[in-house]
Image (cartoon, rainbow, N blue to C red; front, side, top):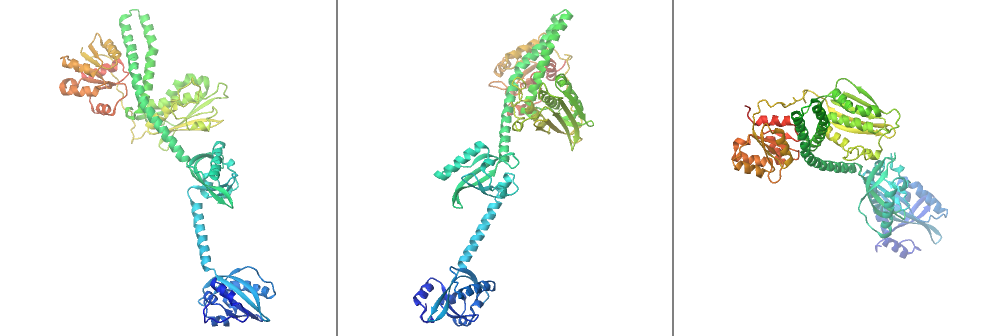
Length: 639
């Protein structure tokens, strides 16, 4: 202490007071006169803490230096001390400075004797800095807790026995609980799928025992209502209440998982679309052989068989073959339409009631033996799209509903409802066949996925329906309740002046050869069989020469051969049909206008663009002899 500082009363150890001063502790000596506590000495640190002159402190009542809210506590302590009940330890209160500011201090009290005189000894320390630090720590903890509580990711603390001891609001929301407190106390066995819980427990043990760090992983959990969800989680080892625990961070990735599945499904559909286009091309070539061959046989029968009964019987035998090839051709066109939306004819107005009736007639034979059909149609709804596409959708849905029933089903019923709602025509095909399990519903529109026996269906029906409906600007959705039944709901825009009320006129080729003079025709196709069949169909009327490559065709032109028409395949090895046409247009421009292109469906972007901008006719394989003659009539001047 300062050399000029007043000395303490005799009998008080200056060494102890000096040590207290060096420790930053204020010391006050007091004597009690009646009810007044009279200070008799303060050390220098005490004056600094209390912020008053030494002489003023000596004149004061010690209780006047204490904040009013702490005076009763201080008086009780003083009374207890006077009775000899010495309070061991310290307590905290606030001292008041002359400017009214409060100084938080930690107080310890004791008793000493100077001669026969009993003296109170008070030690006090300024704890303002500590209080400020504690307040800052509490504020920091509050901010941190606010951050944790408002974090978008779920945060939880779990003990090694699997008991959850903390969870924030996001964790509760992700798992479907109303409040975090509902999660506290739950065991992980109540939240995780067993296989995933085994992996989680193994990770927790290895993190605590070996300090191993793991990347985030997706886990399957059950929400409060029992529905499944997926969370991506990671964790760190911490100490909680003196024991090791795992601080886990989780993010609900159910929507992301669904999006990934949808993207994967879209990729599969896109890949299958490309495959469908290629398969359609490969099917169309042999299908053209069969179709033209059947029709060529019909013509030969008419010419060569004299007996009308035999002729009629033979033609009748060829009828199912002709119908079968037409059906296959329709399916292939649908695959091509799904793969390339631009191949679809222009949309028009659809008489939905007529389409439903047609689909019902086509399915009637099977339906009448398997289920009762109920129609509930409101008004005369008309949609905007393609009648043939919608007809195929309806036929698929009716067949699916019929095939869903077991042979011993009780009162099997298929209900078809249709009405206009909010700018759309809504068609629902509903059955009471027992429903589809939840784990299966998400895949019903996947290609080649089927719940039917291996010998029934291909798994393409709903996939094709989805493509056909969406291509018309509509939607298709499936709802199913296990034990009750399934409903498939199709919505297609209604017909209106804005999207067209009339269907485009059909182009029906003439079947007669009126105005088609005899001519020389060159067939250019890498399939020799197609050339031979066209020769067979046109022989006797026209001269037909067939080659299998663009190079062979150019050789014919170079040799001076002249043709009235050229039937040219689009996709051929080495040189394509459009490339051949370009070379012909440069060297023999008068012949370029007499090309008729043929395609099985698989086109490159360059070929497609060329055909879109070319005035030359395009025949889609398979085609009929009448369509072939109609195309020739367009490029060959009539007599």
